[in-house]
Image 1: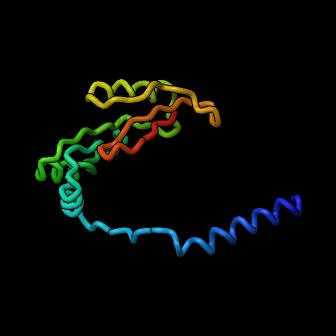
Image 2: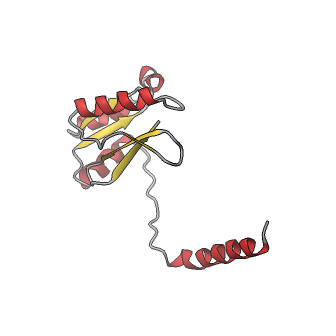
Length: 134
């Protein structure tokens, strides 16, 4: 590897290592149950949840405790259970159609110039972007 490139990388890494303690990181809160998640959602005044999983997880009943908790707290939710490993163009188009049928607005599907695959964005309740990538 080129000496100047190695030097640049090491200086870059050292600068970030030095700045790391100054960055405003939060300590994560570990939730020990679905009920604790319900309390967090209520505290943040979130009234809707989109649960994205695959059909095997739903068929095995692993989402049932979460769905029960959401119902108990009066939080509306939708479960999208058609995810695939290595999603195809068709999977992205199906997901967009499903989101739109639930009243969730999406941006137009576009091609990612880096991967050459389809991608689409939609927004969460805090107006932060969520990306689907095929």
